[in-house]
Length: 177
Image 1 (cartoon, rainbow, N blue to C red):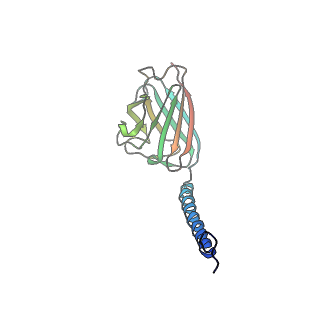
Image 2 (cartoon, rainbow, N blue to C red):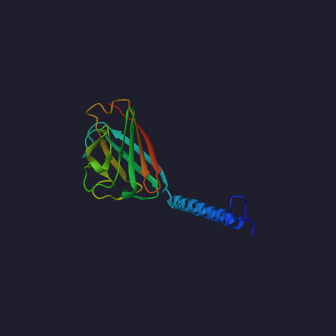
Image 3 (cartoon, one colour):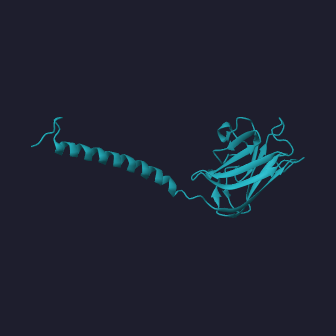
């Protein structure tokens, strides 16, 4: 049997290279398989959505209420929704939905600038949740008392499907007096 000057048999060298190749292929294959399993999450289609921002009293929530209405498309369970709110100088997220009543807890918000009023959510994300389907709305109130929302500000609201991280609705609203 031939041995190269470094003392490694060509058969052993080939076997070593082959085992390294198989190990790398298994590692990469496992990663690709894991990543591709997330691709199977289909984002529901919400054909249209509309929104409004009511600065005066609005039903049970009072002023500064945002309502995003599902106008057509797939129904989506409330526990698969998050709401992202962007104002000119701050952002917030309403998460871990639905809530059991009409108030948000600290686990329901990612809101460092206190943009969302904690005590007033409604529609399909409140009272244990429902399907967000045609004709139904998601409502919440913004904190306008500390100058968070000024007349003329643009409020961008995105409703996100959490399993797929797809945006179901994106609405731009303007705060008026």
